[in-house]
Length: 387
Ligand SMILES: *Cc1c(COP(=O)(O)O)cnc(C)c1O
Picture 1 (cartoon, rainbow, N blue to C red):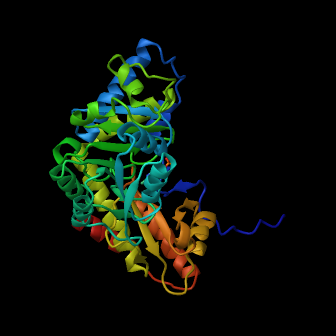
Picture 2: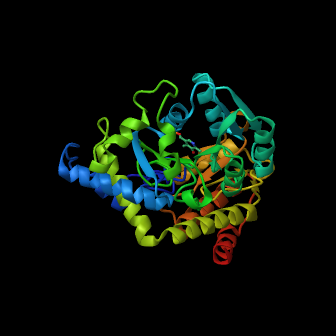
């Protein structure tokens, strides 16, 4: 008889994504992706394009227009800067992490003068701080912020920001790439001028489509002399939209994926989608804290949770063990938080059972890495029920 091979420590048969984008893709969306893509200048595609664009308006709760771009999320951010800012206009950027820095980098790249409100990572910005910055500088026309700063898993009060920008007659542009489909953001009701998303986050699809949602009152703001623009010229994207025509070749397969994602959200109901994410966030936070992790953010988002490991446990070792032993992919920290924290994504199609999976694995990891603890799953279930 041959000696059986040593039993591997590995517990999983497939990788599972718990990253804050790209996220796990539901089977329904994979199926939508697997059809032969139709040509984009055909009625079958035009009808799909029109429907997705209408459903995106439903998602954003706007009577304006939602434009789709073949780009990652940053493309939509760039589109906002070049289509809204005229030469000489000044911006205010909220910088509390990597994605806030991206607004600043975009302004820099296009020579847009800007002020920055810089906050310590993991901290939110009070609307009053925005108000003070706007009061101090009448040259600022536009505020750029995130709803959920993914690098620090921090949630910002966009409703509060919008009250301030509206009262002062300035524009508010929100990168809600890990906000939309997770947290409420009723664009027209709150008075948010522009909202940006990307397909690989709350929209549960592969990367490749970025959207720009223009509130009805801001549609005219992209006309006239602005910064140099060509591929991301939103006037081109708007032009053929009523007929289902895109300016350039769209990401055809992804349009069907995003369409399926929107169907799923409509079936679940938007309020329920938001509630489920609130419960997922509460469950992860409670479960992780029960086994010795500390929350990094003082204002935690429901899309992603940033955790500092228990004393004596190395965050990088947890990330690695989750991947190697359990097949679970989470993100680490960025920049100065590299190797110091882990970020667990839970936006999109996740449910409480998924949270049990990641917390069960996390419990095994802290045990193996020298800080044994139990009770994560129990705490998560209780938090889910209470939220
Ligand atoms: C993912 C993400 C982006 C976009 O990143 P891309 O890699 O360009 O898709 C922008 N902002 C936030 C908050 C994000 O989470």
